[in-house]
Image 1 (spheres, rainbow, N blue to C red):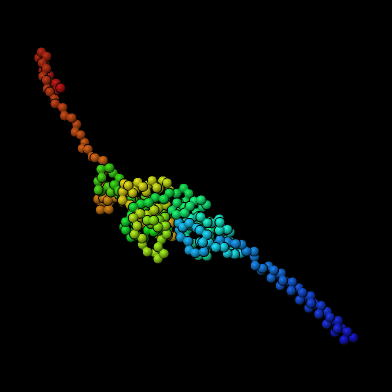
Image 2: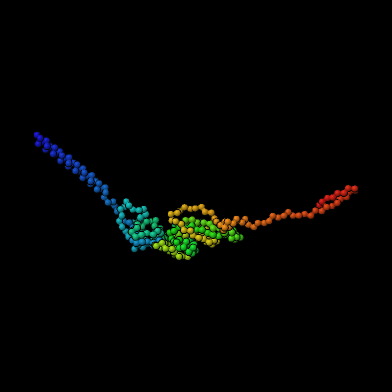
Length: 273
């Protein structure tokens, strides 16, 4: 009797163990299925370092496989969609080519491809002083300061310095569209700035009518500051002169009086005319 009971208990234990084993195996199988490598997609990457203004050719690209769930926005899947476009932001080898880093189709390469829609590229003549010892290079941002005389009589005391533009991107230094890889200054005769059409007129007028100076900004400083124009007389503590010529007050015209004596009978009268 005891032997039969032990046999039944043994069989029952084996059935339970088999059931538990099968259940665990199913859980593990489903877990492994859920961690299966996701589908991959073909993505275009840079085969070598690409510089700003460069036109992309077939040798500049290669295709790699990447998980489709991790693709950055703007990635390309075929090299033909990228070839012939200009580079507007530098890319390193093996970096995914994105639409935000290249010019649009049929927009070419070089400086024109770097000019955003609605903006203009304007060049200004510089020297070592104006270009902050040559450290105003492509990719930096500057303020434009102009010094001139706003009064027609050209009184030196009226010479004024004021900031006319702030946080202006630098597109090119001379004919170079990218900065020196070692951060060295560049000795160039002109700097090309990216400005709006209205600011292009203002910059041209400032260059023609006054002397401009570029003020280099920290790349993280994007705030626009309210500045007050500084006059030459104010800098030296001299009170500004009144605008326009000052005329002395005219004196009232003088008149000459005449005394006339009038005699009527025994009456005498003096009147003044």
